[in-house]
Image (tube, rainbow, N blue to C red):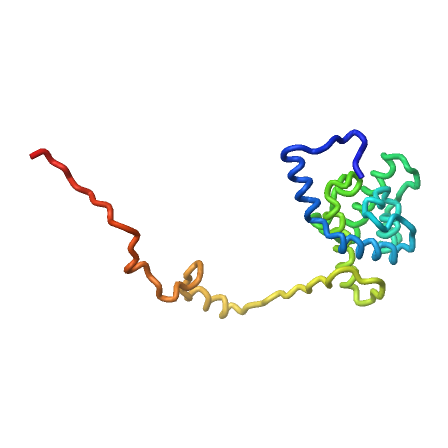
Length: 194
């Protein structure tokens, strides 16, 4: 869905729009919409993620995941301003839930369908974060987030690394440039008048 005052894209804008549309995975979007429906038990347009642009269902989703003191407020009105404010409240709730800045989206990504793929990835980030909770038994969305694997080295191991020869980009396995011929060598002749 696009705003009424937006005309067609040309040049670089059309190229970017086409590239973003190419990133969309409709199967992922359908899975994301099922996840939201299972989490909220709300009716909404299950055909397109843009049907969530009023932000009400999204706010209900994030409020179901946040503690009582952190819940976000949303407005049931249907004016453009209120719908955009609801989406912004959802994004604020995602921050409170613990999503990183790069996992979030901008209001226009969903509201004007500028980058629906980024919105989808935000919902997937919520699904990954939920799976980290061992007590969570609700619907699953996407792969489980990997656990941190910190490594601890002793001072002896750190010192041993100082004495190893670094080949920067890896081993050349004894190869050299000897014998390579790239054509006739350049002749430098000092011409003098006889």
